[in-house]
Amino acid sequence: MKKNYINLNLLKGLILGFIGGFIELYSLLIRDAFCGMQTGNLIYSILNLIDGDYKLMAYHLIIILTFIIGIISVEVIYRLSKKFKFSDKHLIYPLMVIFIIPSIFIPTNLDIFDPLNILSIIALTLFGAFQAHVFTNLNNHNLSTTMMTMMIKQTFSKLFNGIMNKNKDDLYISMSSLLVILTFIFGIAIFYLLFIYIDIKFINYFLVIIIFLIINIYIIDLYKLSFSK
Image 1 (cartoon, rainbow, N blue to C red):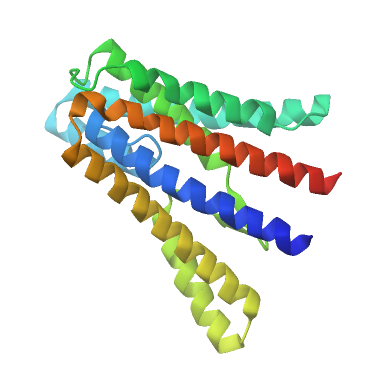
Image 2 (spheres, one colour):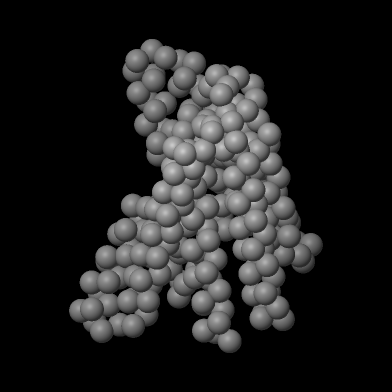
């Protein structure tokens, strides 16, 4: 049962890896900001401050603030779930779907400061914050779907230690992290191919893929919950 549980965690991590790459590039190319990688938004906000473009600086700062609100919201949901004895996943996954839905219907050719474009990136950023919470844990090591610096570090640190110490757990973590990196790259590649070859006005409809994948992750977590009972 433990092996099956770990395999489900890895499958969840791979799906989240694809979602992370797909949504991150969508938010950058279509909404002109990162929804999950706040390092990028922080860099842009500082550059815009130095350049004197305060309006664009504010745009990126709003996204960072939204991400913080999203993280706090997840923690509130987690505390409520403990207090009232329910799984936080029953709220988190439906909300993640809700955060994707606005971007399906908001046009792609809007000005960056158009209220609808701002609504889209705010919803996507809340999605990114929730996704950051829905990590996969393997042998007490977290798999992140957007922090590729940490993932690359973990992959090769665990690989080296696994080889030197002949530690199978470290090698497993290393290979798992590498697979998440590859699915993140795959998500980026798939969206970019769609961006190149599909009419831009239809690109939003492919976000339905993300909703389908979130539903599958929810099913995986429900299956995992059945293990713990």
